[in-house]
Amino acid sequence: MQHFKWPPPRRKIELAILVPSSILRTYHHLREKTFVAGLIARAAAIFRINKVVVYKDPESRNNDFKVLVSVLRYLREPPYLRKHTIPITKELRYAGILPPLATPNHPKREEVIEPGSIREGVLIEKGGRLRAFIGLSELCEVEKCKRTSGKVLVKIVSIKPLKCVCIDESEVPNYMCYELQTHNTLSEALRAMLRSDYYIIMSTKKGEVISEVLGKLKQKLRERRGLAIVFGSPNYDPDEIVALEGQNLSDILTDFIELNSAPLQGVRTIRSYEAVFITLTIISNALYALLGGS
Image (tube, rainbow, N blue to C red; front, side):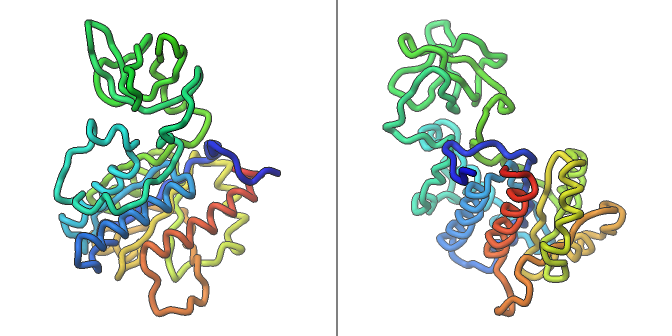
């Protein structure tokens, strides 16, 4: 089996991660906070995460929430669109130090455009006609689109002249990048995942190892649209965060998996961004095996 493909295929089952904004709390300088936010974005891109959900927890500071969300949004945006879609704010002061994600929605400058190519763009009305800026010197004439402004996904249908049509994300055959969502509490985020038919996996030192939950995970993959992996804060596991929010976890979740992704860890504590990389490595490989490649 070929284990590397470019562009990477869409996942057979969607994958989401839920991270607290207090993940940045232990870092004091904006440069450090920006770097850690960049690591979360990089992990999400490497493991083809469909949704990155940032939630506020009891330890969250408003500034950290703004920094994490701003950096995640900035990095997922195609570089050629940033000046059109990302306002310059103080939270992005050090965003320039971060390497690009190099996901499929970040095409190389020398990449050849041909019929069938897919790009993200912004709609522009010019000369009474709808066009899209897709990072080229020439605007693309839009032949079919339900919208008249804002950001869109387009597929090239003609090169000379340059023409395109708007498409839905579901029509893209490969992984593009993550979608960003925010919630005011973990309880709220969990309920949103359940409404979207995601099964919950909690990353916690109190959990079981992957070999002990593979059978249950395989069953849930047949029943649910996606998996949502929940990460706690530097001081609290996800169940403790829900309790601090004044909620009973059993009132929200009746069935979920608790996963310890680093059994018998050799350090007193694992940093939150380290837990993201470790857990996603394990989950991604498990899904790849259970789904026959994904």
